[in-house]
Length: 269
Image (cartoon, rainbow, N blue to C red; front, side):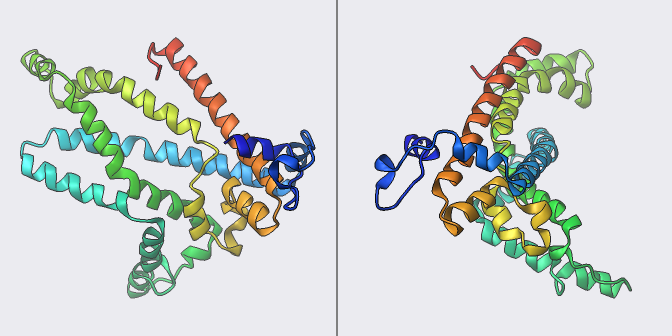
């Protein structure tokens, strides 16, 4: 991190090394914010990250509550294992699954043809890029989020549920008045950390999923840094962009934590 920060303010030259390369001050930051393609990458990063957070926040919570309320412990363990397995898949495998489903000769297009429809070029369509990207990411991490919420549910005192049942509360009222209030600190913790990574929209996944036809909606800061840093050998410019990502994320975590403590009385520290 220190080397990256130093490199952001230097005109790196291989012969001089990091520490002996000349200082350029804020020139790299001025340069990246003047580039239209960086503005596009920044906008795409925020949009994709917000979609990831908005769409991916509730499913693990809902699934964890359903699994926790299952009477059969065996069925709970089996279901938990099934949804947890994709977390261990690499993004290459995830893309392979998406390709098998949504390519021109994939399962989905074969079904469309059999129903008399016209095939859709999902993987080369800018309109389908984000749904496929977000959908596969949410599916992959659904089990991991569920495990976290199940751990939070197991820490709730069972007597609270028993007391609510005795008072006549049904399943939905027990969820609203017992489960969610006790999970609020964990929910805020996870949401705060997610917002802190808002400028990290899954560079590895996007790098696999996007192509020249979807650059306009798929290019994010991580892929831009990859092109500038490794492709164009602009190490100082790429380091400046990554330092901006880190500082923005830190500021957002501090701000969201302070706001949550003020409004909800709960923070991550």
